[in-house]
Structures are given as C-alpha cells and as structure tokens.
Length: 310
Image 1 (cartoon, rainbow, N blue to C red):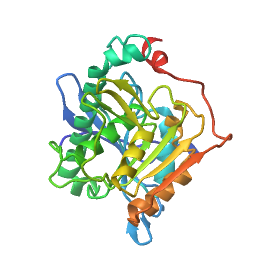
Image 2: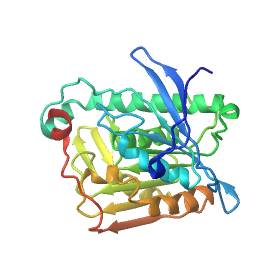
Image 3: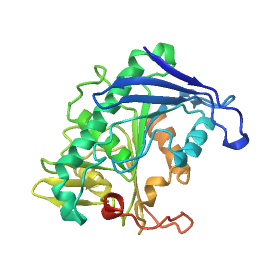
Image 4: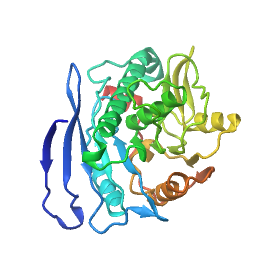
C-alpha cells in the first residue's frame, strides 16, 4: 500500500476537521485516484446500542464534469458525521462527461445517453476499486469493510445507486468476494440505463432515497425513450414495492428541485434514523413520506442546460 499524504489540520474552532489521511487507491490511464479518511471526533461515541457504527464512503456530485472529494459544502457534513462517531471516506472518481458536448434539453441528453451511462459505470468501477483498497488494507487503516455505508450527492448519488444495482444483479467484478454495502444514502440520485428500465432480481441493501419532486437535473421519476434514459427515486421505490422488497426509506420533498442534492446537513435527523434503525440495528423499516418543509433552503433551479451549456 502506498501512503501518499498524511495531513494534520490545526484546530479552527467549530470549523475544524479531524486529522485527514490521504491515500492513492487506483491508477488509471488518465489520472490517479485518491481517498481521504476523516476519523470520528475525539470522545465521540462510535457505537449505537452496543453495536459499531459504519464508516461512510462519500461520492461527490458535479454532473460528471466537476466536483472533488473535498468539496467545501460537504465539509460541514463530514464534521457532523465525525462528531456523531462515524468515520468518513471521501473518494475520487473519473469525470466521464468532462469536455463532452451535450446538446440542448432532453433531446441533447438523450443523444448523449451512452456517454452518461459510461460516466456512471466508470464511477462505479472507481468506487469498487476504493472498496477493494479499503478491504486489502483494513487492518492498517482500521476500517471494517464489512460495515460500510455508501452515500452520494447528485452524480455521486447516481454512482452509488448504480453500484448497488450492479451488486443486486450479481455483477461484482472488482469487489471483494461476497461484499455487500450495509446501506446506501442517495441525495437526488437515479440509475442510468441504455438497456431498459432497471429490474432488480434481488433486493438491494437498505437504501435511503432523498429527492425533490420537481428535480429537473436528475429525474425524480424517469425520462428517456427506446430503453435509454434515467430512472429516479420515484421509479426505484415503486419497483421495489412491486417486487415486495422492504427496508428502503424514500422522502419526497414536495416541489423541491435539485437543491435536495445539497441537503447533507439539513436532513441529519432522517439520516441518523436510517443509520441507527435500518443499518446498525438491521430493522426491516420501510418509509414512504412526502415532505413539505418551507424552512429548507433553496439555491435556485438547476436543469440539464444549466449544468452542460453554461
């Protein structure tokens, strides 16, 4: 294992992070991929009801064209998790849409569907590589890879949803044998497909779906044609319900747009309940709720043209 950087951040009051460790986990033709580990805060309780809390693997958002594992808006969420006894592992992945010209509107997105799908699958491959790195070095790193929850925002949420779909379908190349996530937390995520609607042959692990009903960037329901498109949280929950799968929680934020992708800290109460009840205690707990909360912030509408043409 090649350890690249070990950085100790000076205490900056409430804004400080715990010691951050940075590791190289994969070399690709176009780039090197790193991950950061943020340890639980000193004195934080790393157990719940006598059981160890999972480590959270975080996959950043940015439309597959930008973003980074140390995005500023995610730092307060990392601190929140650390203060509540959770380790956070934030990872790189390749940006498959960077430099790709997407046509205007839904038509342009449809024409680019194969590149969107490729971007998703590259992200899944990189996430799997990060998991394997953690598994291969878990004794030295002190991270139990049998107790990992993966979380993502926007494009990162697409990657984590697609990763769990691959596992449910038995497509686990690149992962340790028998690996399963203990849970998935998706902030405005979906699954991109070029071969029809996702059909889960087996139940996913516990999943927390958080999505705005008026999201124009990552489909809340679905859009596409001829078997190519994106299937969002509403579709996934409906599909799992029809299959009789339980243990997922979906919170539908009434009239909210893609803002939900950035509600990392704002929805801590929902996240904590999911982590404690569905993941740590293993309760088969299914929630389907419409949330109308005017106190949640809004940063303006974001759609495909905003992301890829401005």
